[in-house]
Image (cartoon, rainbow, N blue to C red; front, side, top):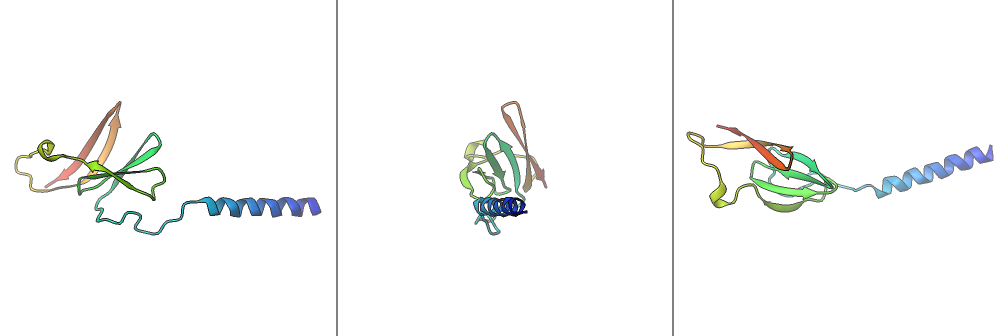
Length: 104
C-alpha cells in the first residue's frame, strides 16, 4: 500500500512540475491591433499574418516577433476596382507561400 501511495505522490509531483513549465499567457497575446489573423506552422516557427499586412513569428504561439510587412512599397499589388482587402489566408506549396485576401 505504501508503494502505491508513494507512486501516486511522485506522479502528482511530476504532473504539477510539468504544469509549472508551461508557458503562461494572457489575452491578447499580441499587443497590437491584429484583425483577421491566420497562422501557419513552418519548421520550428508559427507565422502570423494579419489584414494589416504584418508578419510575426513565434515558437510558442505566445511570444511574437515582428518579421516584416507582406508588401514593401513597390511590390504592393494594384487591383482594378478594388478598394479594400482583408482576412488573409496562407498556404505553402513546395517553398512558395501563397497568401489569399478577401477583396471588396
